[in-house]
Image (cartoon, rainbow, N blue to C red):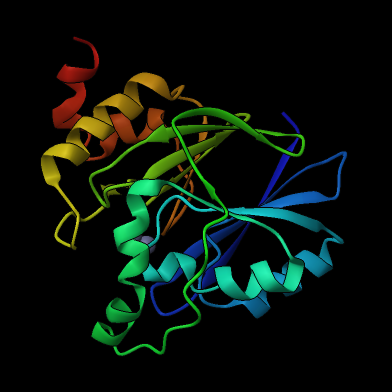
Amino acid sequence: MNLNVERVVTGPFRENSYIVWERESASCLLIDPGDDSELIIESIKRQNLHPIAIVNTHAHLDHIGGVSDLTHYYKIPFYLHPNEKPILDGYEKDCAFFGMTPKRTPTVDHWLTTGEFEIGSFLIRCLETPGHTPGGTCLGIKNHVFTGDTIFAGSVGRTDLPGGNWDTLCDSLVEAMKVIPSDYILHPGHGSDTTLNIEMSQNPFLIPLLNRVNS
Ligand SMILES: [Zn+2]
Ligand SMILES: [Zn+2]
């Protein structure tokens, strides 16, 4: 399970961008590269890595600010779930709403589907977890899962933004708890790493759903 994961915290929302690579190889994936593409590039250079793709858990403005710069800089493809298209299309409007200057809206090269797919030597498991956004996903690589804004340490994603739905999120959380091994390392879109073992014992949003996990 030799996977390195580096977190780079970006932008005013303190979003977690992740650089992921296998110890034997310099190829890396970028997950949810947020606003500060320079910080991310610095980190990549420091580790002598070679990015091969960008994969996003969802398309909220705090998670995609670096995508366009990085796809051009490294000439790499961008992967996103098709149900995120309305969120991506609303990027500039959402930036205006938060008083932020938008970067270029990224172009999607590959649309994600549920299940396993490969990028280079990475085997990625895509679990559809809509609710925070319509096409939100949790992305598993080896014993690591990038949960985006679906599950946080001590909390879960908000559902009051466009395309959010609380009941749908609850269904996704139940599915995630059924499917993701409880000792896997969860890397959320904000805040610190956790595991389902920890969250299922103390996250006030997950505890009320536990009866549905075991049924
Ligand atoms: Zn979000
Ligand atoms: Zn976020």
